[in-house]
Image (cartoon, rainbow, N blue to C red):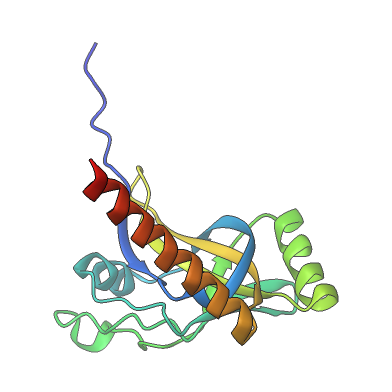
Length: 157
């Protein structure tokens, strides 16, 4: 029996500031409705999701302000770089996310854009609450202390 040729997960874009600016409560994997030129452009790796967010419009969830640059080889069939993109989720997940956003004042933040083992573009979406300035300072103190503690332990032997 032949071994399956499984591709590893390839992270294309990551929102590194999200964990600093938001207290993350829950994460969900969502598919994205893309055109062919968008997929090719994402594979090139120039995509940014740092200033993007997800929003509920009607009974659907959309990714807003994600920058997928135009694919240079696709002349007139190209896409708009910052167009809203529909996220593909189950109805129960959509209802849960919409309820949390409306009732509890939470936001939907994209954490990672990646290709899964099957080669499909996926988005890791987080249900998060914004941190206050003192919470951000506390996070920074913990991170600095852990870094310093690691240095001390390594120097000690």
